[in-house]
Length: 431
Ligand SMILES: [Ca+2]
Ligand SMILES: [Ca+2]
Image 1 (cartoon, rainbow, N blue to C red):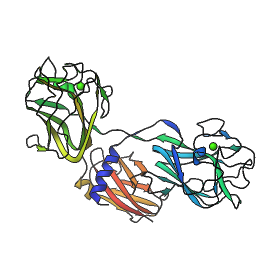
Image 2: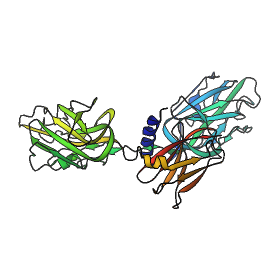
Image 3: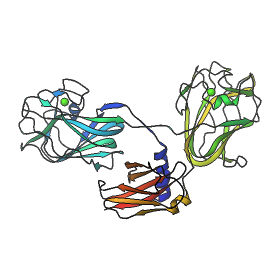
Image 4: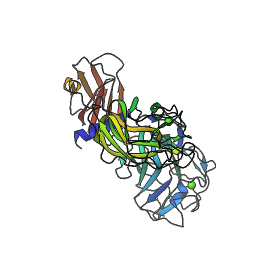
């Protein structure tokens, strides 16, 4: 991976925030290369069939049979569970096949992996490597916990059963953790100016301050019925509107809410040219930006979302070309917001040059020495899948920090060293 690409990725990652809500994670689907037997199905292991409570991490599973469990021809093989979204997974509950099914079919040795993309799987550190045989006629939950990982998929690699030469099977599995929801990186302009003449006492501020939106800030909310108090109406004319983003951003999209049916019917913006500028003077059309907005004929406006190749911008210009045919000679819209991240700190040569990191390669600890006068706030270590593996907050004023990396697997990691304004990335190898 080129360093610049990684930096950009890391900045996006860094800007994202995690929202937490306690959860039992029941996979939404599962696939396997193993051959199902007796008409059983993998779905029986994730849908709660046979459990006395569902969803649950501690329930009891009744006698296993082809309608409540999965039996396959005994072989090594993999089973992939799709969690149906991105989760911070920190444990699992497993119910093995029990005495009411063919004997000794329960799963014994196993390797458990996680994946964010369903393609690349990494063994989960601290996950169980074997399950207990259930020799009674019901299975208790076997509960495990491990250090939290980010995953959208979990893989079981079945290694062995409890002795049956013919079959391998289990009753149910569920995971524990919380949904990892990445907050939208919304850019709300701080001000806007226009060559158009506002009507009805409306103001351009109504299009950037969230007035009329059901949530704010948002890139996907709904805008209620448009009126002069929450939208902008102008005399229909060609003209420009300039949005000041309040700083330099890597902008990669926008969400637009046109005027809707409670206002004058066809006032919404139709044709538009969207340009970006770094200095507020020289504007360049954004390649891939929308050239038209849809007319909204319902009494509320859904978000019209667009993405384009990232541009660096401090200002965005709309050149208004036409409305949707309003005979009253008005052009109007309800709201606009942009998506992207601040460019602040993407490169900071001062910090980059003043940070040394040693030893590299490292086995137990890495020491970070900062010879600049910039106060550090924290150090984050990412694996090459972009996952945070260590989060170290600087709680003293020391310019020398020590990070324990002894628990990390061998490999290449990216270390992000940051202050409240700038950050730099260093590559480190763990032996
Ligand atoms: Ca089951
Ligand atoms: Ca509005």
